[in-house]
Length: 89
View 1 (cartoon, rainbow, N blue to C red):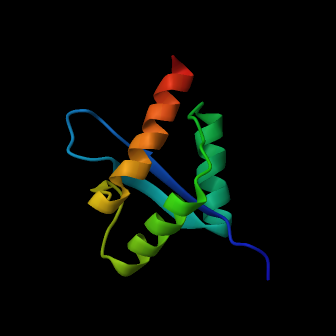
View 2: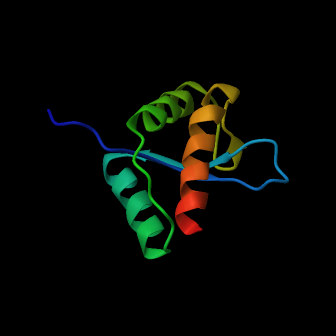
């Protein structure tokens, strides 16, 4: 069996305590998340480790869109957000 595609969409506002998970999915849903982001001009960053962590966390927890990501994901998410901010200038 081939490798599963995972995708997570995060949102962050400096007024909030942490980034929020706004979408997460596997395979076809992951493809849709990426496609929607690309159509909207949202930067897509590949980070397999963080996507895997968020996917496992979402499976194991009673969480939903808008819930803040756990503290053990903050550093990885911060690096991605910094990369996106720098890329946008």
